[in-house]
Length: 278
Image: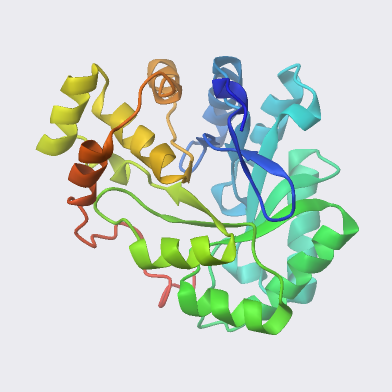
């Protein structure tokens, strides 16, 4: 692992390295996306997480190309939407994402949801495996998959996702799923890492923030890093984008980690992957 914030990475199963702290663009309107991503890249972020469903892939690609960074210095993730499950639709959707991004290859391509009611996520995973073999998806993974979904694609293909991106925050800590990930070498990426701000007023988080001279958001993001999670906070505010990146000059001890562990309430904010089909 490297020692500067811009390049602190986790090692994926396929041998590639992924920045542990990235910038998410969910719910950032397309007209605001390029400026937000540009500021994040200037701040030091080197990973950007988008999706076909967000409608802002083109603006992410624009900002990355305009940044002056070598393409290999950035790490861009995008995702396949539920209506594009299945071999042919997935291939077309992938081509469309690459075209919008303006890239020859994407660093990480994810199935956005298992959409079990459609029952095509195994076929879709097989298609992602082919895209990786072609070299256009450098790494492949999934998002919002639960243990049963993961077991099914593993049994069908033998190919382990590099990443599973899931809802994860102090009130929804996903212990069973993270243990499964650890057993199989799957890296956990946390979306909604701050529970859409719902955890920032928690007295435990506030106390730890005061103890460390940090904001509540910085404490929660540092907690993610201490767990080994990849984390992708979102903001359009330059000050907040900078604060979210300023989490490498302190750590949380065992007592602090134990205190945050005690906040787990099984409270999901987003849809349930068992029933959400999009």
